[in-house]
Length: 279
Image 1 (cartoon, rainbow, N blue to C red):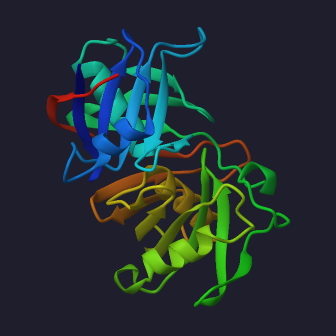
Image 2 (image 1 turned 90 degrees about the vertical axis):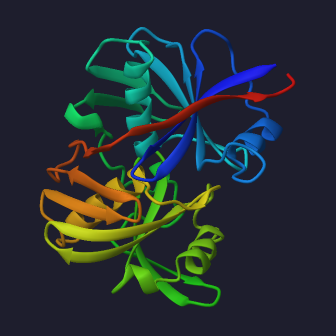
């Protein structure tokens, strides 16, 4: 059979998007590996699946799969791509959409010039919500193999994030330290590890080592986590622009309990195609 897909990206974080609103999509590990493989398949960081809504309070359900076959509950850059896909393919004429992931309900707003603003919901600091086995704190410290004690902030933005301050993201040991922290038992569901360089109260640079995907050119939920942790530590104001390797994202967080993090950034369609696959 031929499986239709659309290749998209948000600030360089790239996706294969599957429309499953009309026909069910069965994401086997073999098919996900084929779609994400950059040499023998299409190539992407994650596979996004758009489904018909399971409840009346949302417009679509939205599933996110990593290259290793694992499903995750949040992808900020992917949600922007999803909003653009829905508009370009005529699935809805709404400028504002509500979509449900496995962990969150997101509100998406289409803006001019293929920009999309996403209400990512409030940061979740409670240890059990991240999840993290340590008592809740503004800063944590764990020992890691090869790096000794590592200090970080931790928050859930629909999936777990640890944020580490660095002097220079270009020199940060992103892969090695990211893997080391992911293997710590304090993170029972592993963790996305962000390396944040603060440039000022309204600007920073960020690299993220993601669960199941490795380093991506941008991580939307990771940018939200970094903005929230940075504001909580008094490093950022309410609005900050974070430079990632694939582009810049604008973040807003008022800082109060229950206040949502708002993320604005680009989305773009790269190409459409079909891939042969046996059910």
